[in-house]
Length: 391
Image 1 (cartoon, rainbow, N blue to C red):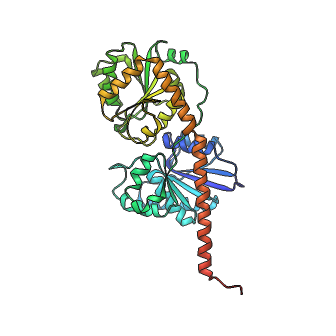
Image 2 (cartoon, helix red, strand yellow):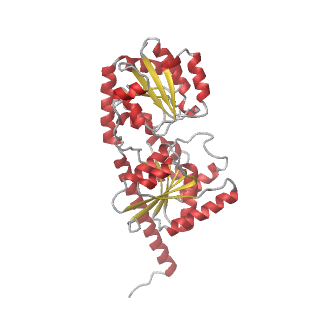
Image 3 (cartoon, rainbow, N blue to C red):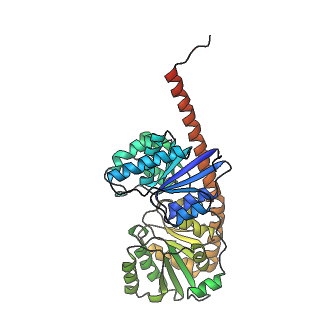
């Protein structure tokens, strides 16, 4: 990698496991010829960092302390790392990674971009971030947004800088081999002919699984053989389990905890449900499309950019348990229609949302910003030295 023509460093607050982390791994996995990839976690590593290392990326953890002094030390260490590793361009992800990447890149004289994985919403940032964000945006060549909805939510707040925000839609690789559906269902205690909905996500207010439980309870009255699997962990688990029990759903709704085998769970399920009230472009939604599963999702963020309503799945208003129940009932009760929508969803994933396409588009932007940096440096040098008439 030391001889790579373009050396790209991704900066993340942490590299445990999540949607943004999985996308960084796609950039490592599908880096083009001549691209060297480095990954730096500001606070801590984790499974995703180890996966990046196994894929051949140079990986670093700065162990930033939670104090102003600790932040300044981490910033200086990051700038030194950019110089020592001869980084060509740095990509900072989300607010914390973005701010540190931009500031360190400025100190090191390296061009920077940042990536926004989420919509803007009140309370996303610290009270100081709104004052800092426009400055950070002026200092980057591009702000990469994972879907058009994310781009619009950020660009509209900074109209004078709107041209720096560009959309590069999320993409994911082909799934690893999955185990046989019958064996997976047996492990999960599901009958071979049961109709099964699956949701995957953190058990947090954003994902609104309480709405999904309400909707499933309504749909399940007419579908006695249907089940719901909930994969993910979070602070709302106890509340959601209590709500399941209060709705009388019992064993028909199973909480699986955090899972590393999402492709296997998709294989075992018949459709994927996403009840979020806020999304960027959900990686698990793309995983469902890739698996050929029909999708029922709330119409928020990038969901409507990924799901073709009526053609690959069904979109419903966020927070509307009645509409969500109706969509679940239709697709759980009609296996042929669900299968047809799922097949169309897989074709849509293959045409628009592959990791290879995402990485190629991003690397084209890296090449463009490095060219811009070289031109700017040349102009600065000419101005500093004076332009002499050879005559």
